[in-house]
Every structure is written in structure tokens, then in C-alpha cells.
Image (cartoon, rainbow, N blue to C red; front, side, top):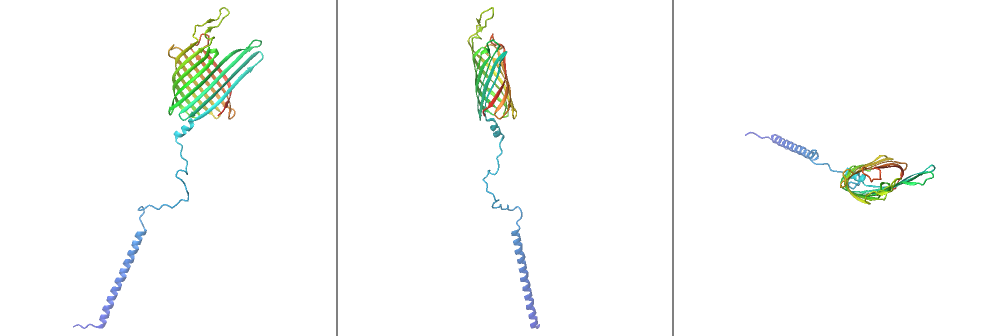
Length: 322
């Protein structure tokens, strides 16, 4: 039997205690490192796994859409430029005395209203002149007046159906009154506030009331006046074509021009009329302008006592109402 001493028992208990203490320290360290690793995993969330929280406020209060200007579309811009209200009056005159006496007057006016698809326009013009030599009575040399009423309906962006009526009195063309009714279609190639260009095509019903000068061949030194054989009234069916152009060349200068062609349909294919208008207007103030106009009327088969072509050139003061 091997003897077991007390010192040996103490050594054994001390060794056992050291092992137990070392085990506890090791377990504590492992638990500490594990806790730190878990906290690190919870704190460092990988980027992209969750969106950043939005700030509670940016320091401003704004209703949606009120903090910026909405862009104007091209359709809205075209719509704004097409609506128009235009009205003007014009007048001019000439007076001479002495060896030659002359009195010439011209006057007119225009109105155009455009609202969305509807447009109304009207105009009137008149010219009158008397002339004579010294010691002789003066005589009328020009006497005409004309007016126009028109309505356009724009059924498409640049196309309109229209109905217009005109009336004209011209003593020296042999007309007590000429009435025309013109239905048709217009195509606007350019249609803005600064510039307009368009073409028209349609039919025309023309009714003439002729004066006695046209229905009578004037007397000559060797022959008395005799009836010309023309009926006092006549009605025609025509085809009508027109091209017009208006341009605000500069802020103070504008140009207007137009050509109208009338072709007879039922009586004679060789009968036609041509009307040319042109004018330039220059502003001298916001409301006042000087306008130079020219009009030429040509008819290849006029009344027997009437010349084929008439032309009028005038200078007028134009007052723009609005």
C-alpha cells in the first residue's frame, strides 16, 4: 500500500482549483467576445439593406405645384396668339383751288374679332372726288362705296369654313348696287398675331343692279342717246379664289396685300374679274398711323360704256381704336 500524505492531498486540491478558475476565466472571455460581436453585428447594418430615413421637414411649407411655374405648351401658345380684337378708322383728302379745283375724300374702317374657333370681321370704304377748271362747274369724277361682312368657323387647326357678303355702289362702273354672297373654305398657312397668310376657294352668287348710264349709250354730237339693250338687273354664278397676306414687318410698319380672282361659270367661261389690293401702314404714335393703299379692279368684259380697269391710290390717316 502506497502511503498518501497530506501535502499530496493539498497539491491535488490546489491543482483542481486552478483548473476550475482557469475554466471560468476562459468561459467569461468567450462570452465577452461573443457579446461584443453581437453588438457589432447589430450596429453595422450593411449598406443598401434599408433606406435612409427622410428628414421630418425641409423648413418650408409648399402646396404641390405652387412653387414652380408650369411650362406653356405650344398648343396654348398658338391659342393665345390667334385670339384678336382689332378695330381702326381711316380718312384722307385732297383739296385744290385756283386754276384747277379738286376735292377728293376717302374714308373707311375695319373690325376683326377672333375668339377660339369663331371669327367675325367687317369693313367699309368709300371714295368721292369732284374736279373742274376755273370758270367751269365741277363734276363728280369718283363715287363709290363698298362694305363687307364675314364669319369664319375654324373646324381644324388651320382650316375654316366661311360665309361672306359684300355690297358695292360704283356710279362710274355702271352699278347702282352689286351684291355678292360667297360661301367657301379657307386654309391658313400662317396664323399668328404678327403674320397671316391664307388662301380661299368657293362659290359666288352675284346680283347687279345697273344704273341708267350703263343701260344707255351716251349721246354724241351727231347721235342722241339710245338704250344699250342691257337688262337693268343681272345675276351670275361664279367661282371665287383669293390669296391674302398680312405682315407686321416691324413694330411700327405693317404690310397687307391680296389678290381675288372671279371666274364666271354659267354665262361665259371667258368672263372674269381680277381685284388687287396692297397697303403699307406706318405708325407715328401708339394710336395713329399713316397708310398708303392701292386697289386695282379689272374686268375683261365690262359694260359697253365702262373701261376694263379702274385703280385708286390713296394716303390716309389711320386711328386704331383697339
